[in-house]
Length: 299
Ligand SMILES: [Zn+2]
Image 1 (spheres, helix red, strand yellow):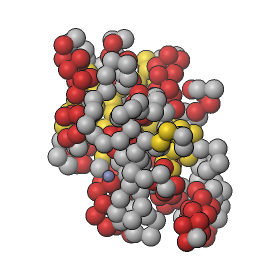
Image 2 (cartoon, protein in one colour):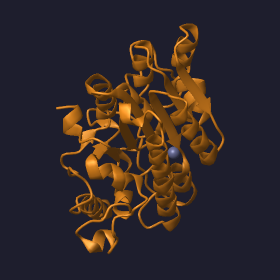
Image 3 (cartoon, helix red, strand yellow):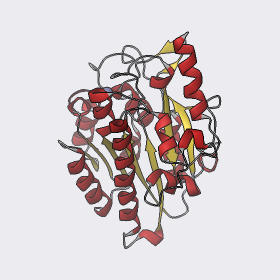
């Protein structure tokens, strides 16, 4: 009964007027992410480029601290932040409610390996990859990095969690090596090293850049996922400003006028208490921010 009450409260905060461009009821599967990215590369009038910033473990209801709602009881009297990446993307693009963890009849873990792989491959994982981390994507399940690199684009994947490199993307890394693809995998220890690297990747002319920041997930496991934990929310707000700095790096490029950039910010799962992985709505519900309205990319 308590659960039903808190679910209702959670959905109400997601649906507060002005934050998301769709609703909890019309949430989209996270698999739209890779479809939107590939469509951007096909449809761009200028040279297509994409920056995809991953916010590991950021709950969808944290967006109410970044975007003002008409309902002040939900977001406070909180004018739209000038240095917010999410606000900047929403202005010309959109902010959407999405879900992870696949469909009810064949669920998958709401965890990091499954979450990012589904976002990058545009599909739910097959058996037995729906649980655990002891698997590596095979040829039947290419990421957007592989698809784009095979077409001749330069792509990069920057992250901290070792499982990405040791397990999930191991086969792709080997394939890129063997076939001399311009596909780079870069491992770091901290979010600030990762930030410096993403700045470098933007300057070094990658066509598709993906990087995963860990702080929301680390704060969630450390002190609790949720909108009442100020440490968790502070981590999300700081990451929003750090991401905004990356948007300004794009505009500094000498060739910016000849390029068409899609910026994507999304999370791989939510969380509850100090964990995630379950089918609870706070674990399953995620967000997707795009610099173009999604209707312009996929119908
Ligand atoms: Zn986690």
